Figure 1 (cartoon, rainbow, N blue to C red):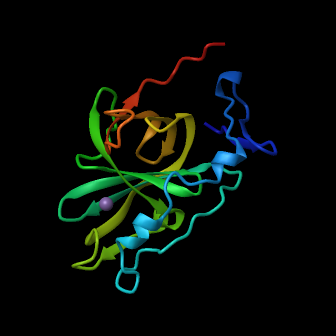
Figure 2: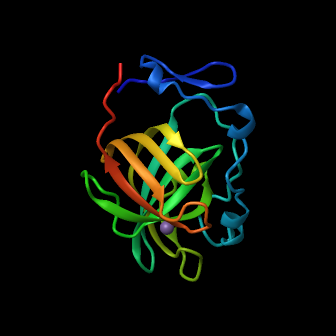
Length: 191
Ligand SMILES: [Mn+2]
């Protein structure tokens, strides 16, 4: 559990673990956000809401942020956010995150949020985008196992969520926003 990333100039190496876990992120893609924050910022009036306007940040060599916010909007949902490439890649989970194996939950990808959003708690005013109360429901760090446009497999170390979790896009290679989020058994060590 005390595994950490070691910065090796241009990529991360997972320290104190097997070669299976060596992860490489090239600098060229790492600092480019999957989406910019334009959509996030265009939906909000920062004169009226206390949510952060934010900006895309370079990713320093440290553990990556994981957070879930409980959002009592028109419909209660839980917003899962994972730090990737300087922003928080985000999914709304209507029924909440699964704590046990074999429970699959719909996760709807939403716009990337700024890193500061991971600390946001408060009430978004009536009439503003996402109006309602936002609370941090769980947070901690995560380690990527496999991440691409259609699949996100990570080890989460939070207070409520622990272990290996998968997000799988339901219709890969489309612009569908619907993913499935579920807990998976920890991969056995191969060595
Ligand atoms: Mn939300």
